[in-house]
Structures are given as structure tokens and as C-alpha cells.
Image 1 (cartoon, one colour):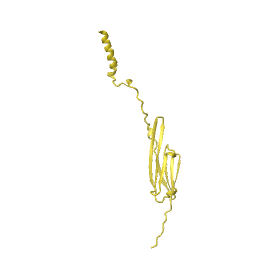
Image 2 (tube, helix red, strand yellow; image 1 turned 90 degrees about the horizontal axis):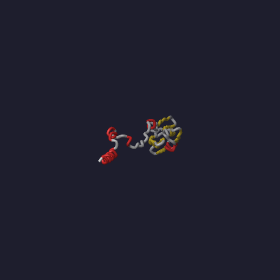
Image 3 (spheres, one colour; image 1 turned 30 degrees about the vertical axis):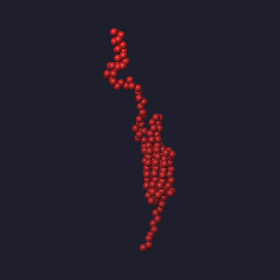
Image 4 (spheres, one colour; image 1 turned 180 degrees about the vertical axis):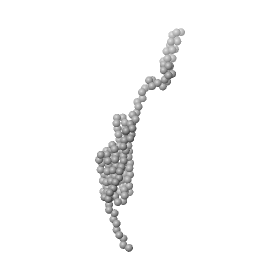
Length: 146
């Protein structure tokens, strides 16, 4: 009889485990395997500078300076629609640090004035700044006879 009780206690303990630890901490982490946590981007990485632009003009030309931190010239696409007088700048920058992968897309459209010669527009990329320059054409004014 004593052996039956011992076997029963052993069977019960093996099924229930340590009742006291289950009672005081039922969701104890020591019984669980440690999950692999995904790395969360830091505040610095999330608040990295975004693409910004600045426009300027004088009597002879129009300039658009587009600041694209972390970009290469190959990351940027320029489209110029001469009929609609639209300049579109699109692209994507990527940041990879270890297992962390961040990407940012940008898409900015500019409508150029009628006095801008779109056929002579040029673009240059240096130090993370894309500069698009287009000369202005002189407006032709003529007098009408009455």
C-alpha cells in the first residue's frame, strides 16, 4: 500500500510540477523559453533628417535645392515634363545597421513658371544635396498698333 501511495505521489508531482511555485508565480518566465525580441529602432534612427527642399530665384535663373540625407545619386529619380512644366523628384533612402533595416521614400513635385526654360534645366548631386537649376527666358513684350 505504501508503494502505491509513493507511486501516486510521484505521478501527481510529475504532472503538476512544483505546486507552490505554480501557485505563487503561475506565469513564471523560468519555465518559458526566452523569445527572440526584434530590435526596435532608436529615437535617433526614427528622427533622422527627412528630405527637405529650398527654392530660390533671381533675374536669370530658378534653383531648387533638395536635401536628401543618406542618399546616393542612384537613389534619386528626376522626371521633367516640359509640356506640363512639372519637375518630379522621387526616390528612397535605406539605413541598415545589423538586423535593423529602415527605408524612407520621398516624392516631391514642383510646377515651374512660364518664364523658366525647361529645355536647359540641369541637375547636380553633391554632399546629399540635389540642385536643379533652370534659366529664365526673357519675356517678349511688343507694342500693338491701334
